Length: 279
Image (cartoon, rainbow, N blue to C red):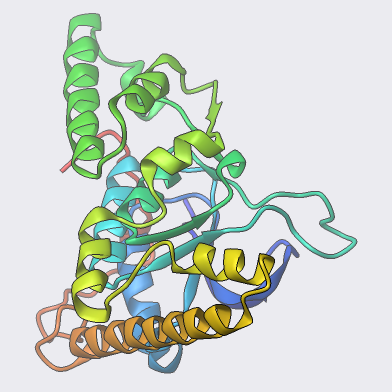
């Protein structure tokens, strides 16, 4: 099974034009995608060390296990994920980049989420049907309950509201619940730990952009200019912090550095999907 396409640019592999270039992850999530994203980062250090790099998600889902591994990677690299409202261009006009099923784990794992909620669909995780259907009923029930409980605990640790987890569990693998603006506000556009980090490091204030817009609306240009300076100062500080952190990750001995202990993987080994097992 082929994994996600990993590209960079302003056009996705299926022709969806974007408003700005990004690292693009599109297609089904399968085992091996975690390593392939790391390999891409090593092979493209100039892009990876861009503090403004956004990661666009356009995936119907796939392996929950691999999605959780990628979510941990997104957390480690201080990723900003992006799901725009629609595509540009005549050939894909009206098409929406979609993050469905296991792709939701990538959203809640990332520190910063610039997400159009109506493009995000969730439902309960499920086993590979050929394997699950071959189990005896009591074994199937036991395996299912273990998987669901493990995923619920993981989502709760990422501050996904309990009611949204329960809604997810009411939807079968053939159904979907599409998130609302209210849902995404509760999930949050910034992970709590990361918000506190940039508050401490860069004096970040979440409401500064809104205050700037309000100052412009009432014609207070002096206050608007002051707030824009604050926004720019915070932005530069955060971008520099991201770049410094990623540089350490790629440096010898860093978490993403090439190691002589890294085992070689064949394309076949890298694409064996096991969505039925959570770490």
